[in-house]
Length: 429
Ligand code: CMC
Image: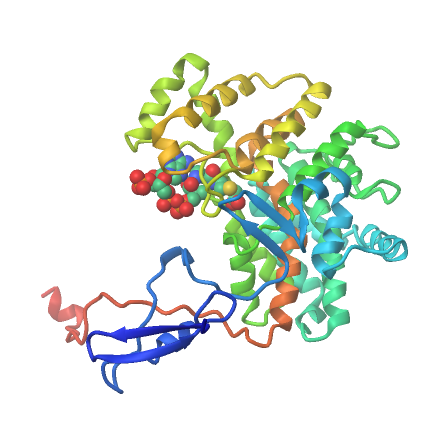
């Protein structure tokens, strides 16, 4: 068997042999297929990059048909059950699990970079009282580049490591302060005696008590949610981080672009949309009408469907289980009954079965977040904190990848050409 693809261009009768490596041909090889030397070569038209690989990556493996998700080769189910978010972050960034000594150093480094410059606090206070926390997070992560101008030295591995530590450490601080701002509550400084996730909860909810000790079951559940969100190969926001990072800008600017992409309702904003949808449905009796609206194309069943998973989203299964642990502490969210019934009906309906639409990670995560007393605007912020190690692992890989070039997709031009410009004074006369 030869690892190549033979293509016959029926326009010219010419044949081309295109090498196949790792199950892919190079787009540039297609560019050699031309009708004449002065014509542009053949291009692939692929909106949304549905079947276009933009990189080689060793970070995350997904088999959407089988519902498999692995970080650096480790199944997500095992990591969610037996690891913790900081260890998973180490794994994603370094490619291997840490030794005890490596883990202790990593934990120490992250813990001692949780504080931000006081000026960050001042400018965050300057946002409007009702600013969306995700907008605040996006702006403040980007602004960190002005506090660390050396972050532009992306070819220096030590420097990259420093920025990676800083960003993983500071995201919970920025996220928590975005939350407190909307509530008119004072910003709470990090408590370095607490774990990563417990400290985050403290910065969110602490008031006058000396130390905020969240229920360990809630800390564990949120830690699992962070693990589930930590990476997801070339999703929209990671692609944004890579695309912006390919210009060799500093990682704060690149991650800020990722936060922007995650903000959108088709990506990280979906769990917020799920809750709004469940609230709009209001009661189990209204579900058939809602499903009809979806099938008629008037609605989307938010939290269902995925570009990659066409069988089940393994993260959704783990989250559904975590729901029970959280509700044991907080009491059951009344929207759960609507969600479960909606899922049951959709999974039996041919519209969803034939399109391979199953619950995704966002279908249940919003319900858990609400049980934590987070307003829906905070959901994407939580997603962003979890996704930060993934973005950075992918960015670090990109920077070291000799095959990468500045991201610059082709277009298929469909507009007019060579018109003659008539000045406004003549056109409007
Ligand atoms: N409700 C109703 N119909 C749907 C849905 C949905 N949630 N998702 C897809 N479809 C239909 C779609 O209308 C199309 O039907 P037809 O073939 O008749 O035109 C078919 O299924 C294929 O959908 P698509 O839009 O071409 O699929 P996509 O891969 O471009 O979109 C998606 C993937 C996740 C954007 C989409 O399924 C969606 O909008 N889901 C709801 C939003 C959501 O839950 N997003 C969170 C994704 S998981 C978090 C993450 O990893 O980012």
